[in-house]
Length: 385
Image (cartoon, rainbow, N blue to C red):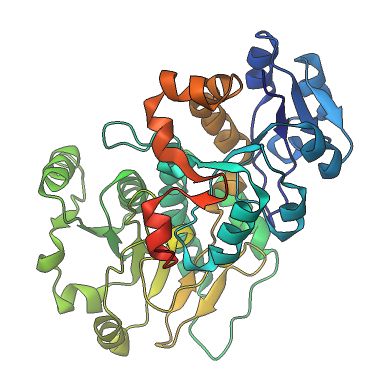
């Protein structure tokens, strides 16, 4: 059996942890050894002793953990300080989003390290992405909730952004309320791009905050499901195909939320730059880019952090593009990820060949193996031939 290692996440404001104590206990019951870096679960409400009671071994630092663990379970992709710790023969299972242009250096480092890297977001079962789905739901909902918060705070469009006092604490409070929508906040005219898991939750939250919602979805079957789902809604959303989105609807919108995602691929641009420029001329937009992990749904997109989450684009629109948005739902999100990843981790602990026999969908999760980029989408995104 491979030794499982759970490092402490080092991405700014990342509160999630790769496995919960309950999940660790299930692995331990199968004689799978689990190492966890000290305090890795603290921000999710899980102190070291909770893991020790379930049979985990606490290690003092990342160096020791990576040196001794064979199967690394993370939430977010390894950051630069973690790259030298990866070694040949290790298996990495995490959100990776390698098709994003900004992850070119990470792709190179993963290849050079000799690890086998499996991405949560490219595990696909019958057209569904089971590990990404609960995080997409959180991200879509938070996008709508944060939009209402930002509008209430009247963080305007100016030469620079000045955050109000305790701004991060305000965002944390909104996230802590999840899965409940903050009904004390209100939204106006919202256009949601994408009617999948993230887009649907964004629309639901926006409706609960009295928003007028338009959902733009290119898939006709999904549009039919959305029409049926919201048929009884008090403020029924307008569901449109992409070609039905008019310049007037775009110009009237106060908030744009991008939730269009394709497994493993660079996110699609949903509004061309010229159309966004025209729509922004009369009314500046608040744009929240849920798909920023995969490059974003809007031109002029770049990932931000919770410490400085907003920026102004070239058209004067206020942008929010935090790449680890569900982080602020630390415990809820960690529990949700652990539930869906645990069967795969159990199988991977027995080695990749065994895991692939039990879960064939893991083949599509292998983005990098033996120094080679195995994912066609990642090769295309980085022009690797």
